[in-house]
Length: 396
Image 1 (tube, rainbow, N blue to C red):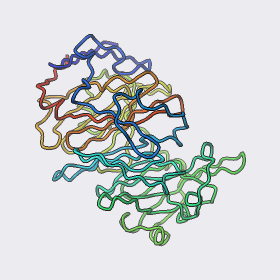
Image 2: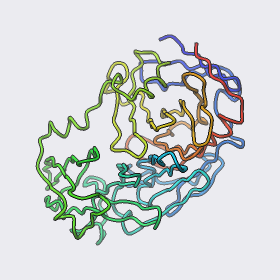
Image 3: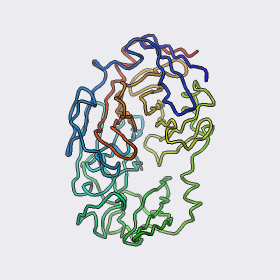
């Protein structure tokens, strides 16, 4: 695999790509700060506590945390950007499992905890409708052995919505509304703006059974409540093929044009999967670049496409951006820019990210197989990094 050299006037990064599952920037050339974004004045680290978040100098300096299965750990399970309609600074959000909702508005970070809803259930799957964040709850039959009156009640929520105006989380659809067996959980779903297609896992003793349903709201999602949902949604059985088709990864050739252009500098045979969301949009779509691989060490990334910018973040911190962030000039005259977030200790990784204004928020976590230890997020001042420092990108 030929090395790909990115030259930035302030950061010189040599990235060597491999199809063996190594991270995009595992081999880094000697350069200023080793090719990483400098910590001073540009990044701020945060870690999660059991009920909030605090600032730290670096992830490994955060207090040790007993490792838990990812379904039970306090961690950012999902993140996304609202569209902002191009008129205001778009809010960014993160669903923090077992804790609550983080809201970012470029100048402030605020946590909206909800111990009643989050305490004994797993949260995730953030999507949007009309720029309002929507996400789901479920309980892992394998890992979750706790009991909770609210979580185990027939009216326990499946689909909820967060409204920044009130700072409250509003349950929209309960498990009871769906009329599925009591020992069932919705373990996967796809929202396309019109319907939810869900996988239903039923565990009874040593037997596990999967079924699939479609949920079509007759009214706007915001108008649903636990009391009226039963009469305002149509629930029907679908086939496993229908569900898999909705969730099936697509070839990278079918990715949004802006994302394809941003990553066009990568070798065409570099194998990686990238989960791409549209700001203020529906369930992210996964695209496969290069040869498909089922290897657990395969390269993975997250991406977000908006009206004015596109960004992609790989788990090792390699980041690509193009376009213009809020009230800013385009960060490039041509293709895009590449930089690397600060190196994480061994056993840590970056996961999801979101952008509000010119601030990028990237989730990090201490990870070992299916367990998570310390976790938190990194705030990166793209305004200082990309605009106030005369960086230019040249690909060769």
